[in-house]
Image 1 (cartoon, rainbow, N blue to C red):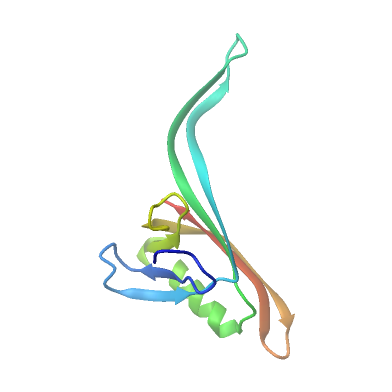
Image 2: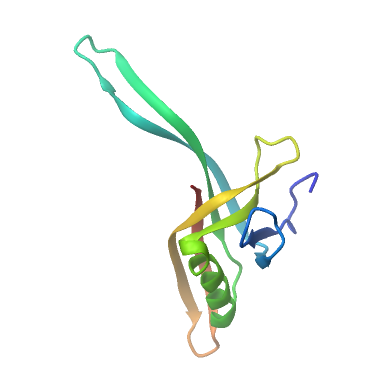
Length: 132
């Protein structure tokens, strides 16, 4: 993928060789961020800040378009049920030259709203992937 557009897919594999695709989906919205991982941070007696940054990790937040319960179930089953809740995934990445990053992630909070209970339409499904 040389650029990010509205049809950019998020793909999950069981391993880093990308041989066994588990699921792909196109999110309605996507928020990308970098999280600083600190071992210790705080002010010392002089008032100066001391920070021991260990690493930086990517975080991807997704919102899904209106979907059926089965589609949401399939996505949740894929991201929650493989490799002890860790999975290999490719996401859009604004730091990478080709705008893609592949790595090991786990899923954070997940939620979805019932739009029409009787019609099985669900909306605002959201979840985030956090780099291991």
